[in-house]
Length: 425
Image (cartoon, rainbow, N blue to C red; front, side, top):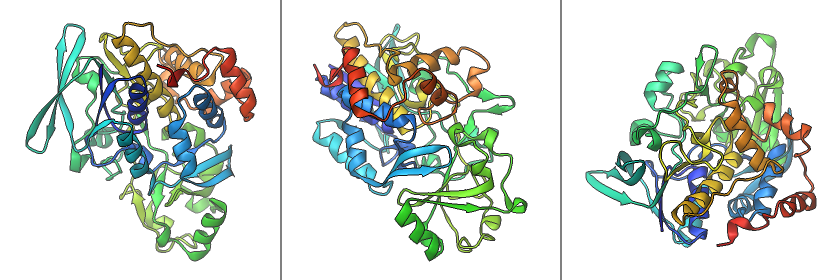
């Protein structure tokens, strides 16, 4: 059994691990020189319902990446507006830890390798053709997973945003994102809300070293710093364009909210540098990601794949999807959840077994089915879905799915008959 995964973000890494644990040979292809994608600058875990989802995945036998993240956490039990018991991992050291972990599991990783052609055999994919420098490489597989995300390429950031702002995805260096499903001839879905096509990434990163000693000391000690802003320098009108709608709260407009993820994570999609430097403690501020964070941010949710509840892409029998490619899902936790299920079901497809459908009695199952149904409506295409806030976290609480009690979460998984399912061959 051979599974080929295109896209090495958190979703692709989780899919690789899940398929490998089921006994498949696994090939992970990433167009840049690092794994984790936006996870290279994210870092927020376990806030609100993400705690529940992480513990469900651990009980389901798919928790290795969560445990690896927990071991590399800088701060635990952090509260900031609208969010509780968050963990912040170190974005500077996370990627090499994950890469070594996957290599130790026997996963074949191809970096700086860009897929540019799909070989179809009827309604099946037989192989993908890739380019690495001047070499052409053919990757054959029995099942494929599209974990290429939905951000960029620069033409979309220019058309629907403020232009390429040199974000961590580094399209000018490694080429823009290429969707595997689209290359296979699948008509992708575009997120939209009113006149806004896609959505803008919801946060920037500042070099800690460029901030005042008082701010840095506060971040290092508490993990979060909140600085009130006078009305005349508030960066207003950005809440509606954010991909991360769980942070679209007035507090994020009325204050500068910083989180310590190794860098200083600024919880706004962009903030003009000239204005930022007028704030005490920010006189020398400099953006780490995106480099032009005073102008804008990357545009996401441009190309999602139509799929079913098992995460199989419609129209291609051996293609699955995960992460943002699987819908309007926001966050690393959400990427790991969908990646794990996609990797598991890809192997079941090869073995001609029925796919696993996670039940709605678990948050990790309910979010997959709920997002699928919501995206069939015009209104639903304007929302984002995450365990940590906005309309899905509200649904979690209404349905009694949100819990921070590990024993209760384990019992819920046991009642579903799924304890350790992702670890069982």
